[in-house]
Length: 298
Image 1 (cartoon, rainbow, N blue to C red):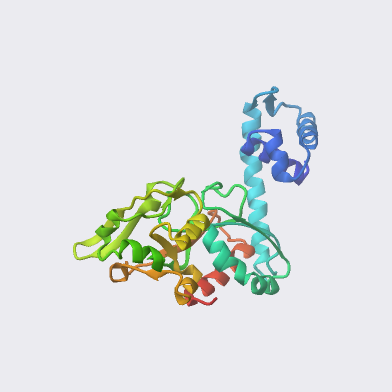
Image 2: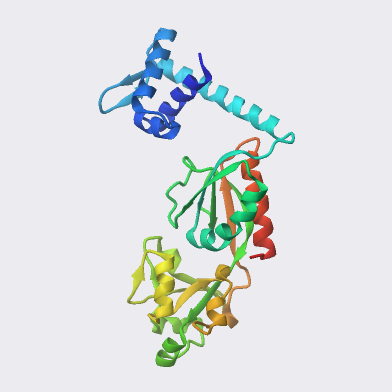
């Protein structure tokens, strides 16, 4: 039995189809099918029952999968354990990141990171939606805010802050809010498609921690588009300090309600699968960006 045949079988069971396993392994569907047929002939048992629309695992297939998956896991752990002894991180590192973090805190540092890790190939996927919540396609996720219940391991990289702001033109026409509750009488830019929490703005007031459910006549499902609407004077919005405030330096935006800003920033996390040994490529990325985000280096 070849190691790669076992890997093909485990991939088919875990992904539920020959096509999905083929995409994951970078093979053709016919190649995956031939591997499975060959395994069943050598073993003398049927591992999978399949029709044109359905695939199921036989009793023998369940036993084979259970033991085969553990063998592969043990082999990967053995390779990782050996790789700790002086080997440089290598291979492909697949990262999925929140858009703003990716644009302003990952990409600007990539030349330095790549130069320090020449044997790594990076693939960066930017998205503000959790389209790979269990990291089935990626090695690591970089996100911010409250974490969902998950089996993933979270490592804090740093913090960011949300600045409430508007253009001078908007303030001249509509006035400046003096208290967080005044926002209820203003047009606030709404982020759609990510749940109500994205439009609940938090402050520290005389009554303690307070959340304001903002409303407005313009909503958009993109953080960058919301930023452009903010610059255009559509309404009041939130801007992360990851951008370093160049808009404020140029006078394009004016911060408001600064006296009510929450003292605690929004945490930024690196998420990765729970495993006994952290792969060097993941460890080196976490260490690198923890240094950058905690020191505030640009």
